[in-house]
Image (cartoon, rainbow, N blue to C red; front, top):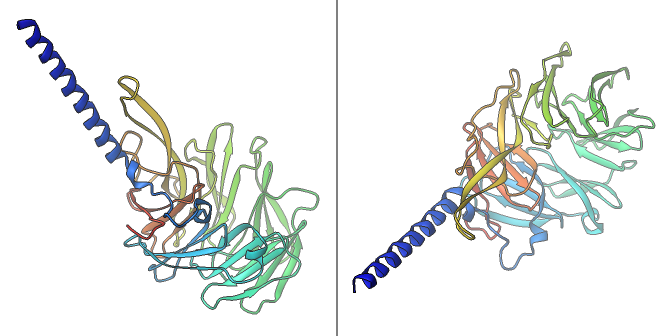
Length: 369
């Protein structure tokens, strides 16, 4: 009898230990936000939810996403609920989309299709196909459409739809990233191993920076107020950010911005900060094949001071870190600079608090919050 009691006691202790481990595992999944990554709605294929571009309206009340099939969705940044959906007008969306660009205030969408470039006014639903562009995108203020035709830069006025001018940018070379300043007086671009600046008033150009190991991993962008130009590069395992004052073109010292190979960044509306994807390690308990810890990477958004390079709110690493399971491919600031939205390669859209770097919520494709 005594041996049987001891046997039952050991079984009870073992069962209690298993229950405790399962509870810990479920609690870990809850705090990691494993249930916050929604799948597609039952009636929507996953491919149709892969957003390519994001924008937030001027009043901050609507987040707009455009996906690979030409679908346009409007979300509430406050509740995370889907407010409505439509499709892009025009012929380019029907003939096949290579990529999509949306100005930050979600007014103009530029679609690069297999049959050319098409500019779409999302408010008036008007479409326009400029001649002589193999690739194009809207300026940050939504006033200009600029793009390339071979090695030639062409700039159009989106209001009058007239060609503002054309300039040779990189004859015989390869251009990876290019941006136009809000006044359409300067253009900056990156090549495989260097970054360049050119004045559109006199055509003079200058080399801003060079790095033999960039391999095209560089992002260049003007701030919305046009007072700053930023460059983020990835070289030999290190990501660095450098900026220039556009009044004097005085460079600031480069600063390290983490180990992520993603060089994407965007300035805040006032140009004082910039947001960029950051890789974070998350660890949590596993009990599937014995007790242990599992580590994986998630992608979050991190905010830096554009003048000093100092990082803002950061959750660090650990089991509490929540973020995207795949690489972030685009992000956008709200007009007031208090909220950020991001989309990853799987089409999942997330909202972030720009002050403390906290993930607020993932948006539900099915319309729930």
